[in-house]
Each structure stands twice: as C-alpha cells, then as structure tokens.
Length: 294
Image (cartoon, rainbow, N blue to C red; front, top):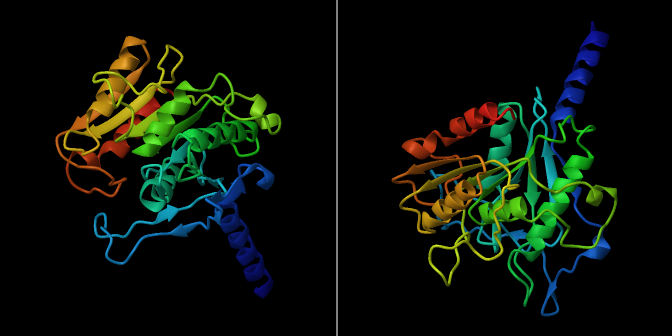
C-alpha cells in the first residue's frame, strides 16, 4: 500500500511540474545594455504600501527591466492557441500581475497557452520609448513560433494582447513585422514575427500627438494587419480616441476588427472589475477567438 501511495505522490508531483510556468531569456546576455548614465540598473518592484490599489488589491510595478524574458503558462487542456501578454505601465514600469499573470491564468482557464512578455523598460536615454520593447516583442513572437510544436501550439494561432502601453506595443508589432528591428540571433529570427491576431485593452499612444485625427507615425495599418479586438472606456484619461482612430484605420484597410466601448471604467483595471461593462469583456474575447476559429 505504501508503495502505491508513493507512486501516486510522484505522479501528482510530475503533473504539478508540467503546469509550472517556465521562464526563458529572450536574448544572449552579451546583447543587452543595462546601464543608465553609468549606473547599473537592478530590476525591482517600486510599489509602496500607500500606492493605489485596484479592486482592493495591490499591483506589482516592476521597474528597471534589463533582462527581458518570456514565461510560458500552459493550460491543462491546451487547444493549440497561444497569446503573448504585454503588460502596461507607460513604458516606464510593468504592471506584472494586474495586466500580466492574472491574464495568463484566465487564458489557461479557456485552454489557451499564455506567454507573459517581460519587456525592457524604461527606455535608454536618446532612444524611442518603444524601441527595445518592439525588439523584445518581435523576438518573443519568433521564439514562440519556433517552439510551437514543442509547446503544443499551432504556429498560425499565435496572437498578442496588450494593455495601455502594452496595447501600443501590440499594435506596433502587428504592423511592424516585415523585417526584424535588430540583428538576427538564431533560427527563431528567420520565422515570421507577425501575430495572427491582436487584442488591445485600453491602448495608449496610438494617436499622433501633433496632428489630431491621425495615428502615431510609427503605427502603419495595412490590409495585412491581423484581426483585432479592441476594448476601451469613454472616461479613460488616456482618451478613447486611441481606440477609435485605430479602429477606423483597420476599417479603412478592410481588416477584420471588433470594438467594445463602455461609458465608464477608467484605466488600468486589468480583469479585476466585477461590475459594469468592463467586467464582461474577457467573455467577449473568448467568443471573438471562437468566432475567428482561434
């Protein structure tokens, strides 16, 4: 009897390990620069005890990220679809749990493999705020596609989802995939870094700051932009126009798109809202993925 108990315990341990998220580095260490004005950056959570909470819970605000990674969250019953999650944080920090790990857990619950992208922030002096994150997003898409068979993913079912600045990053890589913005590292960089679909939750920085009615110059929508789901609220201080102008550009290019607007909800709530319209958008995402055969 004791023998069978030990075997059963081992099987439980193996199953648990199989579901444990695996984190891998995006780049060889000699490719990265991690200093600002001669000072070495050390990744850390800058959240203070008195910082604002979301739905009564604190938020991890990870700063000074110089070693970008992807962490793979595998569901128990994978359906072959994967989503790379890009947390927001104004390209200064990453809201790692609110707009990261909590989404990974939710996607796993519907059979989707979730890949948490911990991209580099903040920008180095003199560099566009999205330069390093775009490199990280392109690299992540190539790596996931390269490892698709090993990770139980269909190579043509790999999407990206972003919140706020992560929404800008998701839109940017959805339209910047013809060539890598960095020197090739390995065979993974020979594969396409175009997402098969994109999900934007209260996206930021999509509008031109100088000319009203236009998208930011780095966002160039074409007929090859992937199908996109957009969610936004009208009272968002980041401005609803970010979602509206991007949706109109998709419509003009005849790209399949679905947008949901809500009168209230603000900004930066992830999937924690339990009341109002924004509490149901995860279920709308699930239906949209099913309707689009993902």
